[in-house]
Image (cartoon, rainbow, N blue to C red; front, side, top):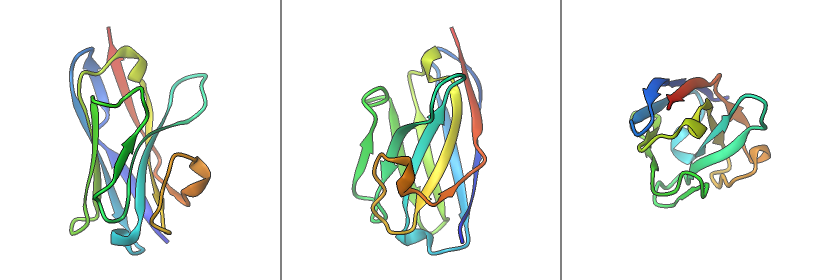
Length: 124
């Protein structure tokens, strides 16, 4: 049973940067695929970025490609989301998620474990 805790959210101006962190405990983190999702007010939760358990394969939603970078540190049981060139439309609650089978992907149903979320607000 994995537990995920996100941190690093906050208020930032458009064009700025934030780095989200997700700390994992329990389970075999090094074997988990990890993902970041977000949910904006009035919208459904959507995929943002994912990373395989090996760390050598990452993938992104088109809306964040080239601006966001997902990474992981298996020794520290951490996954990160570096967000640059932030836009007001990036405003959302960001969630960290884990797939114990190691594959991840974009569908939310793939992920068994979820954090509580961290708010990111980008002002124009």
